[in-house]
Length: 216
Image (cartoon, rainbow, N blue to C red; front, side):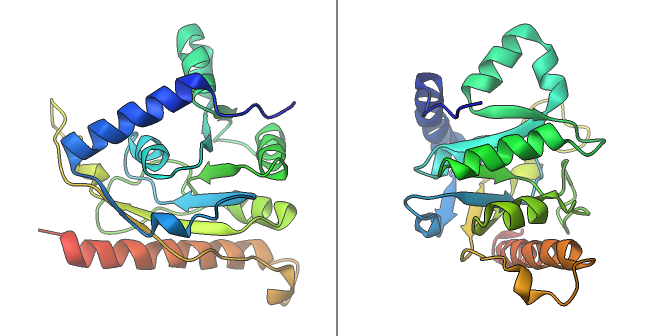
């Protein structure tokens, strides 16, 4: 399957999302210029809210392709929308070779792939969820650099028991790209888990720094 260029729907959505993120959430992004201007890149972020992919799409200049839970693609109109927004389905409950192959196609075409290693939202403010090794697997196969990203504040948009959304300040921090080399690791058996740990440690460091600076 060929990878299409940035869709008109995505361009419009991105501009609207950026304006709303600025007005409603006073969003700021530290280090957005660390995203390489061209070539394949894997953006890896923590995941606290359904809004997270929207915030990432809004702050980075290059279009980002995201995995999205396959349930979204079972609703006809929603399927067309999320597809136009550069999302593709993934089975979160079982290994999904089709989603991995799609990810590798996106990267081989020199584009940006957005992944959440935790696989689902971890809404607690004090930490990150348990990651899956799929990010490391894709990084090794594609040879693409991994750009660690931390989003702080998005879990406060819809706190537990809230009826209406809130409008907290959102801050994004971007770390230096990680270049994953298999030669870094002693054995084949543990390279995926150790590479995943390295990626998550980078995200956690960014997140902890934001939490220390912006927690109230």
